[in-house]
Amino acid sequence: MLSNLLLLALPASGKSEICRYLSHLDDEVRAADMGLGPLVFLDDFPYVFFMKRVSQELRRLGADPVFFAADEVPPADPRFWGMLIELLNEDFLTLGTARAPGCSARDLLARIEAAGAAVGAPPGLFRFEPEVLARLIDALEEPATTFAQTRVIAPPPPDATVIFEFARGGSEGADFETLAPRGYRHSLSLLRPDILEQAAILYIWVTPEESRHRNRERARSGGAASILHHHVPEKTMYLEYDCDDFAWLLDHSEQPGTVTVTTVERTFHVPAACLDNRVDRTSFLRAEPEEWPPQAVAGLHAALSEVLRSLQR
Image 1 (cartoon, helix red, strand yellow):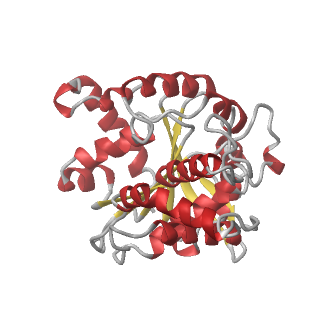
Image 2 (cartoon, helix red, strand yellow; image 1 turned 90 degrees about the vertical axis):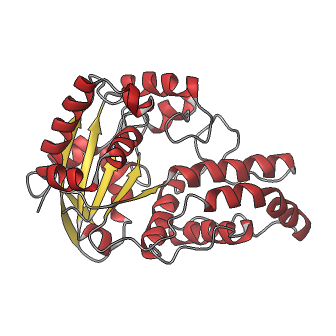
């Protein structure tokens, strides 16, 4: 069984749709065909959405927005991507001991501030005047409660598969050797060793052009906070996701069929494989399950089974 599956791809490539399909399967079928246990999902998108809301409220208060200067632009500080990994690390560490659903906005802001400090970002959220901070916290109580509802509460079973879902990239013509703090190489290097020790990578392959097209399409029928239908701003798609370094990492790995991940503690060779989704085989999963075409389901199931089985240690 795969313990930790890192599900990586450009935005709108099919990650969330695949998560939906895997969740729809019976436990026995998923285990037998794909080598996956009961599923636990850790995704950095809810943090991005919440931090955008933080920036919106700070702009409304006439204060430094910290994370996003405007809704339609990329993060102001590229260390943002490392912050998200630190938050996922904490989510993994606290699986089964999740915070109460009513966790406060102050608690969530403190977690975000600590994640920033861990990657060397300057103090941002608790440097404001007390009145500004109090008004910010008050405005964020409702979205913080909504965020808390995405947290895992029940302890996962010992044979669970934890799926980490995130996207990383760079602008056109980026030098992958010097892409940090953007890119997969940097973000993977920040993951906890106990994640990497039992990890495998499934990369969903689409072109940047197709990623942008599907990003526009998926936003037509859903809201900004929807996992299946959220829209990444067009400017961000070009500046942060016009390419990514995953193929480069495969080509430069020390061992075939793996990605070499070097952390401050040691080097890992993480098994990795690609699911070719350049010809779209996942968008149908945004519909209700009773509307899924049987032939499309069968084709996706076979492809997923083959690629996930190839990752078994």
